[in-house]
Length: 182
Image (tube, rainbow, N blue to C red; front, side):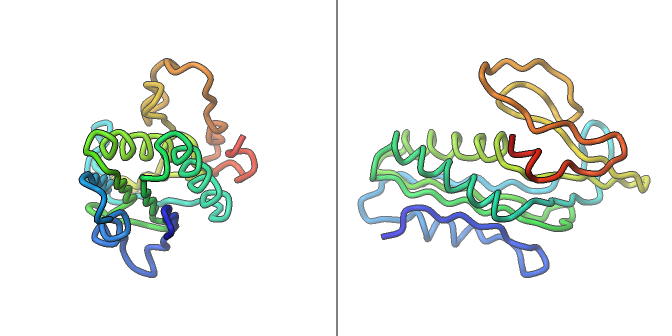
């Protein structure tokens, strides 16, 4: 029985599927299943957003997703199933960007596992997000929900012992994948 599903889906191939996530983590012995679906919103930092582009080095992202799942498995035990799927490409407002699910015997474990999984994916994965705005401007985002640094780069690093990917160059390009993994 496979207990982890890790995927990157090119939006050109179709949208992410939350029903597939629930189907994957379902188990007759599990009383708790938790699902998180992240969507592209229409407003960020007071600016009207028209879309988002996600880019990544897929093998590195998948290795990272798998490492997170394996680490969580070591702590939650063999009675956990985890699902991670992240979109790649240009998404419009309302499109699904990420689907995370956890299945466990009890609801508390399912909630905790799902929350930890999305936070770790967002914090550690080499995924670059470029927001596109109504005025025609586009900006590469930075941020980490674990440490209080928002996407504008404001805030202090509250969580000790973690490191962010290098800042996006002022030229607007993204850092090379190897640099982001560090």
